[in-house]
Length: 517
Image (cartoon, rainbow, N blue to C red; front, side, top):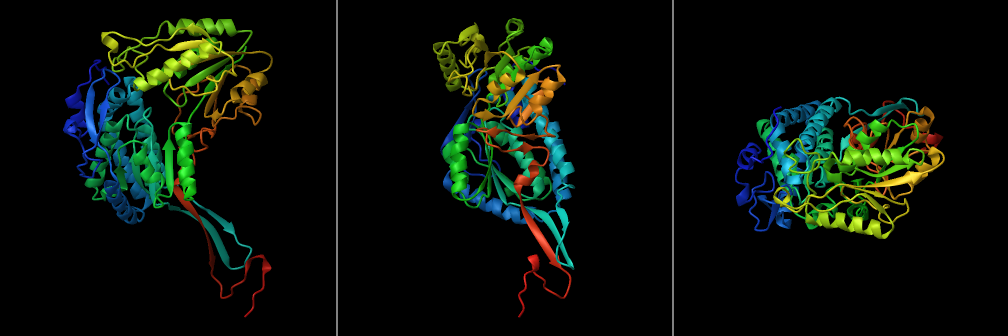
């Protein structure tokens, strides 16, 4: 693929994604509603207005729910391998539109072009996974204690699945959820982040082409737009048995309470405060690569971003120097320019949060090794560009215990055995991703053992950031406990049913109970 110039060819890109008239407003996905309230999407790259999207009101939402309910009655009867073929076609459309969609992700969200294209590739990969899964939605058979009886378990689709996604991965996380839900026979309603609504409309336009070409109802995939109030339509709706929500821990606690109050199910992928442990046996070069990308990739706005570097005292100064030198090579600027490493934060609220975190860590006694700051000038006119910062800190600092969605890396020193480093790593409320850098087999295995990392993801000799779709993605503690994407994550989108079949002329009861008439 040829390198793109650091300029967003707005008309060309939006037209390719079916967003030609977006400046005049667009409907919520496939539904032609004409609400007066709109979301305006401004790019953090240059501060320019990209387009406007109508906000879903309650009347619109009820129409969408009705369409989803009708579609489910049809979609659930389509054989799973046929559903897989529909998803294969979706993956093919994504391949055709990868450059345009990846560019929109980069421009609307602010991540580097390579990361934007990589996000579309994740969607393609999960489509491929779902195609294979369509022939493997297996249950279990088992022996009955009653003669002449057969027992088995099978899985059925839940119905309507609600998806709430975050701005940092505006399309990939939706695909993780929706492709698996679709292949299981569910239909989906998606509320993308209000900070990246155009990415959502673009995805809806792409899948709508597939449904139209296959004479399938539009309600299999629906889109709603707005802030948290629109999300509450779904979280409080008894007709939606599962809500999958990605975002902050604060948001996740609200969603969990709302859904639990109506005895629904929730899949939560929330905050991370991820650490890399660096032992005396670590490869320093590998450590630098993993830590720097983990800390500054997506401008520190990944849930798996590296927040803490826990370094043994024997190599602390050596690692600090190597990391500091690497930061001097970072290029900050327009993410569409592939020579830049770091793009902008999502908006000025994120910039303020970044500044407050740096102020707080200094007040708590932290030492700025690489000073941060907000960049200004013609190349940074959106006001959303900041310098990645490195701070020597104490593990118990209040700010270090929190997740700050920004490129701030805390250096923490440990002494003694690797068990001490593991204790530091685990002593936070979040439990998403973790890593250890070591060539010591015993340290690596201990880190992966029951005595080691308490996170949902634990890596050896790679960083905390980045995951493949083959494995289940998610974390523990305040990260929410949910699992998305690969492995057997598909089971959360289905209901399990145990079946017992009696093929005799008698009706014996279990446990030898007698009930004669």
